[in-house]
Length: 148
Image 1: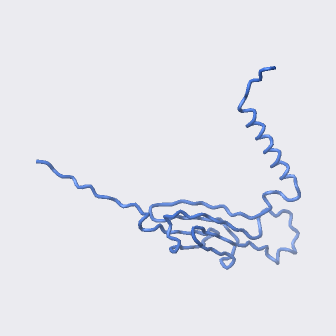
Image 2: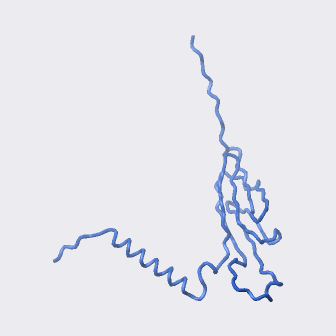
Image 3: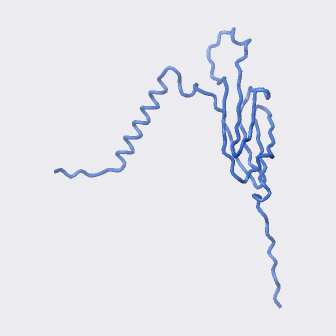
């Protein structure tokens, strides 16, 4: 019986090759992965008072957007429509994505789901979710006793 040295990285490299070939095959199919759906980019950050989400959705009318909070889930739906008057033109290239999108975000228990503010400026949807008062940090003053 021959002794074979075990190389833990061999399996990892093999897995990476299989994944690369899988994604390569997807991109050569009839419909590329990037064109399959429209998913707007989002930035999420928080401070002591609120959680903020900013979604990039230029070219979408406010009436085509829906924002819902149900339980601990925030959902944003919308649709970017292809302009009818441009359909008759001879396009050389269309790189902008059109169609509907749906994003869902799980909210932490520190967020007050009833206190959400939404604004839409320059193609950016900004959602501000206030934190519950008990979730906000309390500064405790330290009393220093002076000894004589």
